[in-house]
Length: 76
Image (tube, rainbow, N blue to C red):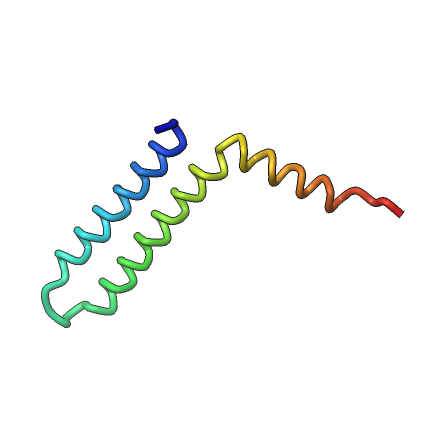
């Protein structure tokens, strides 16, 4: 497993643990809406972490750089 895949797995596992802790904290309906916001926020943070790991890979950086370069190049 390469470093990017390891980072991705750690970020994913961390997000799963955080969501699990948030779910365990909610046992009744009182505060359910707040807990739902907390879970959604944790999921968003986990997804953001996942994107950071993906965006740091050289392959993705190259693909995005080429895409932007082609978009900004005028061939007329």
